[in-house]
Length: 212
Length: 181
Image 1 (cartoon, one colour):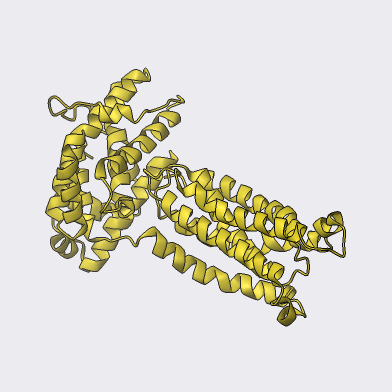
Image 2 (cartoon, chains in turn orange, red):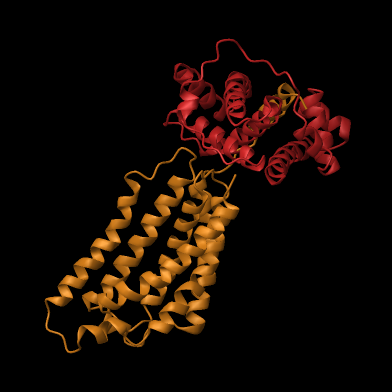
């Protein structure tokens, strides 16, 4: 086919409008989130003392950290779906949850504690944490990868990693409401390990599926 | 090619607003530029320049299918360069060379005289044969024979909506097949 002919075909197809990647991603997540929610409530569910836990600033901090992970990773994913996108400046968004968590660790250090820091760091739920976060994030990871295929990421592994990060952030938000380990030391140890695993899977999947 | 920025961005904006004539003019305007860059890169990678038209067509398909990722408030050229670069790197990698394309290659390319198509592209034609029959018929009718959507619908006994869908799916299918090869 001559290039002129191809152009004729492309120009005639101009009526076909694709939705912006952000809106496709929003739809995909709205479809996948209930799946993760059902998985969570049928297996784990809220911790029993959640009503009292809500008054504990360290319990609340977990949600602040995980939701800022979700929001930053989502923003970066949408940004990276533009082919000319550079990460400059956008990386800093991820410093928000890191900063919040560091602030939590320092605050906790300055308070009198019943348990030694090693006990708080190791906690008692690390295995559940390492299992629940990757599993709960799976539906969201698949959905966000499908959505990001509508984009044109020239750094597909990085875009896939962000998809992993946002899915794991969401899963961690759910998990945090079940977990009784509220010490920022526990959060700073096990959550990043679980989230990092999903992020790595996302990067691998992205390098394969998000190429265009 | 920065000097074309305003003209290209304007045509693209009008195309996105539904002006298919403006969009067609944009595609015609960027093609010689894409051709020049592609030839330059192939020559530098020690590859035969006569493969350039296949790569040009692949870039054009990607530009078309990914045009919703251009932000109308952002400059057009960097977006175009990024798509072209992505496809060039990919095409050359498939041809067995790992190469690096600098963004300067694009900005410094001067199309002194319009580069015409010399050796015709063969990849699209080859993959066209593998498409579902409806998509192939619609593509050939609209692209090659320049028959309108309405006349194509009448000729193939399809609704206009079905022709539009087949056209878009056919183009998306072609792009996917080119990438996989």
